[in-house]
Length: 466
Image 1 (cartoon, rainbow, N blue to C red):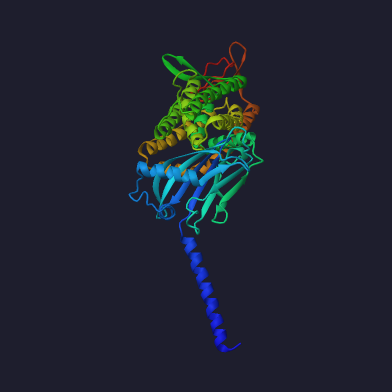
Image 2 (image 1 turned 45 degrees about the vertical axis):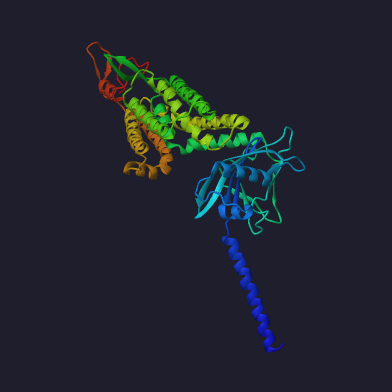
């Protein structure tokens, strides 16, 4: 090969490489469309994003240049999307579709039309496989790409996982197939139950409220001389019964408000709900130190349980479910909450019962209530002002380590119990009274310090526990 021909070949190859690189760069920087799917029990919801400049090229008409769509532009877009986007079962008719919520937003510096869509199948249609056809913009702009992502699929148990791209619509391939033949209502139910468990596990404020309620389960409050005080210990059986009553009251309260909010019967501002939850912890902390009324914990649990239910509903509402899917997800979510509550009871109550009649219990109770009061105060200020404060910042750093509280409580309970056994085995000096009966010289001193002034049921000694 002559030198001139070799030079020509090299020039041609370099030109091809540069051309391909330029095309690739153009494609990489070209705006793309996005379709995000939420697959419910029957219907499919979608969020659409179409860049304005590409839409103008495809339709030959500019829309939303003033960053707002006119009614006429909205209606023309509704018709356009209905003609170019459809969902169907394999070999079946297209599902009914409804497009709405049109707006213009800017993402990464690119203005785009945003819209929502709801697809509903005909009666008896197969939902095991779904075919999404989308050639919006693609029918004219052949280099355009439409990324299709799946955010939620109730039947396959995908609820809060990150969006994942399931396909890309190109000019040569405008249909994406979603295989859902392994879907079932049971998988969705289990997924919402797990979501409920995770919501409680991550909700330190809910856990703290429940813990402070459990803290007084072994105690009985009574009114004497115009004051309400923790006056007696409950037996272990009565303590468990009191725990069951408190947990049931909390469950009843939050279940009612959760259902009411989920179905849209009652709606409360999110900030007001979050601030009220902080108030519920403040009230419970005060009650743990000095009872507000006899058996007040069950009334606190039921009343503020209503407020906590509205907070739970925020998580469920974010899923966007409705109809049968909402009803089933509500049952699963609530079950998950109850399972997690039961886990908290099992993890905490045995240790409380183990040291229920020891002097250390009063210190543990007051210390935990004080920590809860301080945390709730910081949260209340933050939620009312909308600004993080120094105390809430420290709490945010400490929250990931909150689990240490349970093993710490267990260690305190075991050490306290072992110390009580050692004390009971120690010899005590005795003196004989004038009546000839043997009296322990340490009885009165020990009774006064036994519970920090707390009386034990059945002991008949009338000591105060608070």
